[in-house]
Length: 207
Image 1 (spheres, rainbow, N blue to C red):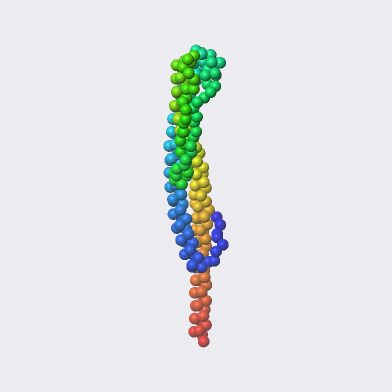
Image 2: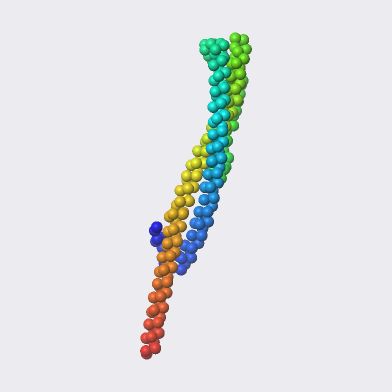
């Protein structure tokens, strides 16, 4: 703990007392923010876990459909059918404010159709696999958005925690120690002045 380099005056004492009040108020606000950010992040983590399980199940189902299609048509015919894709997917990224954290909002923009081949010499299982994959993209984009949100919240929590600790363990204790030091010094000055005044009175009486 370090005493700040200030003048030991009553004016400085009042100024430091105000700074302590502001620092404590700021500490409380930051601590509340940290707690709410933590609550938001933990809630989002639970959603991410649920979404990951959903994605694993969907992906497993898609792969099974592709395997069935391949067993019906053969690898070369599937590769030929998918060689000229007609669907394009773009992801637009916007941001929204969550407790001063700019979190992303992903929006999918789609053009074209997922089925890029004629129905001759293909199978219904192939169509089914592609349609499931099209739906799977929505889940995947949603997971990416959620995971990025968790990362940004974690970064903000870390920054907020450092600020809380700096106030709690450095600035506020230093201010309070400086206030005690100045108060002690002012008391010493008062005692010293009182002693001098008494001596002056004694001298005056003697004369």
